Image (cartoon, rainbow, N blue to C red; front, side, top):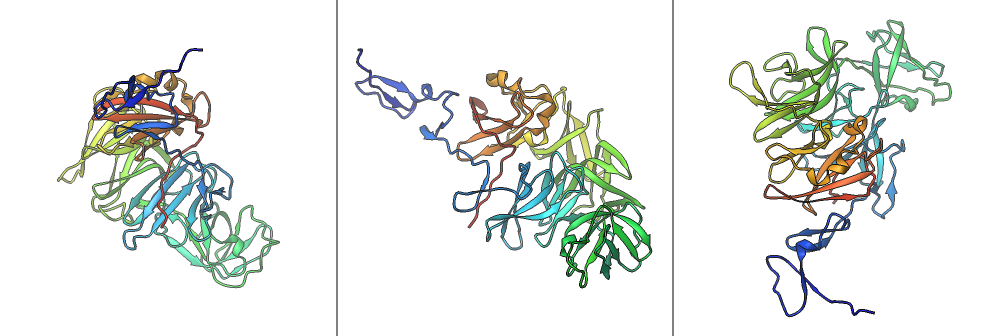
Length: 438
């Protein structure tokens, strides 16, 4: 039997050669080394990610609806310094309760959604999913529509099928969607949204709600009508797919306004005021090209509007036009809003419409992992979710690999604008998030 050869591993720059066989550090790390990473001239064990939230005792905590988390949002409230962790599933928004180590419901969707987009603006969280109205949350109570134009006090609620609610001069119309809160006794109807059928000027029923076995109503409560964002006259924006902030404006993309879908439209508020969409600098724009909007990202001091086969630069001007726009040459667009990732050097990467990973200046960077990229399920490409992982100095993308669910993670190591290595990890997770609990 041949004697084993011993050798030393040295960094290409810092290593010193001695009188025994050596192998250079950069030759030892390959894409197949899934659990190690080379950083700062050292081989380190890759800090893997848990796919679930832990309750402080290394016990995984499931969301109450049992659905996968599609999106996280870390919010630090400026006025108090308090930190909040929000999780979004296809049916609910949850807040991580640091005392009970569990998820608390903060919103229930009208129906299941496929994706969420969120942003922090004016010390609150803005959330949208193209199913429900654009929502806002300031850490008190529940997520509510960004604009509520009317609310009425409740005076009674019956135990019946359907549940009948009394609210003097409620002003509702059959088919309206409402939110009920602060009811005493019949708490089962609190913090939920309903479609109503009007009985008369003072009473309405909650469609499909059998309250026969609910607790008896005792007092109080408020019914809030959901009307949406009022942008002109009696017209409302009721849904949007994407949200971002730029130059102190809140910008919505791929909107649904006055009963009509506008997949190429962006709409913005008056500067600094999330309640004003009809005066001052507020306005809207049909973006160029025939492709729908697929997300936003700030790059080099400009807002980049990503469309399916197009990118548009947007920047602030000092005239009454508010903005100027310019199409970026080339037919390169984007397939997933959450695939857009910025690294610490300000480079922006995303999943392009030709199933490659691209960067704004470098162009395609995914040649080294092309066979895997080409097996991303095209119909599920919108699920691709990316994040920069500071501990490893890598960008990770969760992808639906030859599947309709995210079942693999690809990793990119880049330094000084040069692609160092690609890797792959067998991790099934739909999204990434971060949270620092005191």
